[in-house]
Image (tube, rainbow, N blue to C red; front, side):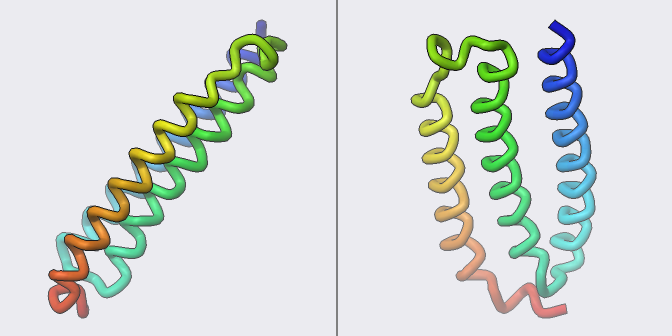
Length: 101
């Protein structure tokens, strides 16, 4: 189905854009810029949102959302992402004095 291909192309472009943003954020973090940590969290939040939207839309595009919808993987990805962000919040709170440029 061409709809499946377009869904994957759009998600692939989203991932490429997210990778470019990640490189920019990495440079901000290396220079200890003031908002670098917030941008770092933003990457993970965008990733969780993008993956969730993709996971919900793909079965709908394939017309198999009733049978194949895998809510557990969406929940697992979200829980792992939130746990990762929470651990990073703790990590960067201890180092907040470094990001003042």
